[in-house]
Length: 458
Image 1 (cartoon, rainbow, N blue to C red):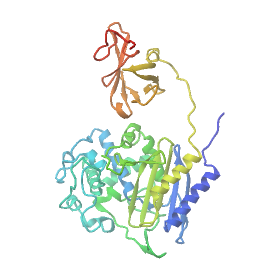
Image 2 (image 1 turned 180 degrees about the horizontal axis):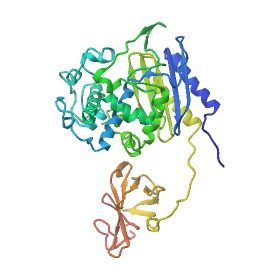
Image 3 (image 1 turned 30 degrees about the vertical axis):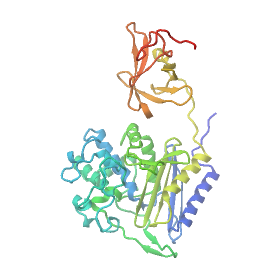
Image 4 (image 1 turned 90 degrees about the vertical axis):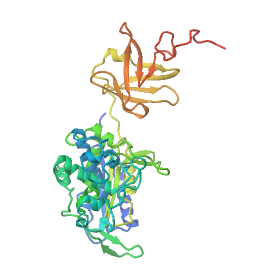
């Protein structure tokens, strides 16, 4: 039986539009637009306007503020993958003379470098970037507030440094690198450092009256990598799909998976959310949602995606405050994922079976803990406890033999098949943990040996 579910069900579409309309109304915003992507394509968008302008759609530009930061992070990861830098490198190695060169690139990416959140007054988001022509003007006399690597502290100045790092290593401007290395390859034609028709105007809404005030739209200058971009919900959903799956033209699936992994220290009271490399990871309604939020005077933005559900959502609005686009985006994602859960891929037998690998499957014992080893379709293996809690993990096959752990405790650890002098399999070694076919069998390679008396009763 085959079926096609490329489009959403009418009931799902109505629920999505109701959520967008509610957000525009209760958020008291001149306009608000949302979009949802599923399994590789944008499948829905809807907008509401209350200021006399046409309803926005998936191609209407808004300023996205700090959702610019994941774009900057992608450019840094490209430099890493090309071998031009390492995430553990101190900033000074590639961008000397900043005064904070001891912080690492990874710490800047995940906001654990200890730098101040903002540049010195006047407020950078509402004043022209010409007031801060150099990094010294952005960092100010006290750029560091906390010891590097010890805590999460969101920092716009840190992403300004990353933008300058990209320019220094690449030998071109951050803007040019963004255009040629991300926007053009991914087909994000409505994302840019400056707006183009059709775009929304930024407004402030009076907190106690239904009155509007125009907000300034400044060029942020050297701070552009922290929040300059304009985009659309359509482009942002496509960007989210890239961050979920990777694209060989920009970054591999393995690298975007690395970006989505928690990287910053978790602060007390913030157990539900943590930062990876340029991305925030949250637990919402039992789901792991990845993305980022953004705001600049006159605009707020939210982007969320769930890798497990194959769904992404973006929400944009043109008000300084009021709507909560990150919450609305999470709600849109949840509406689709709950009403129309992902159809699993059909089970298929392996095209061929390696008999030596097949002989490794089945029960293994770490001490008296029973585990099962199963083959995966991609050539990897999975090791899971057969009962109770335990350390479970998938392992990726390596070209030279053995497997590398991908999950939890065994991430990065090596699983090796150890053979005896006769060539027969003796045991599995997982990061020095020995797994044997029987629990504490005489003659097995059990660390510390096995009592000669063997198993006994009381």
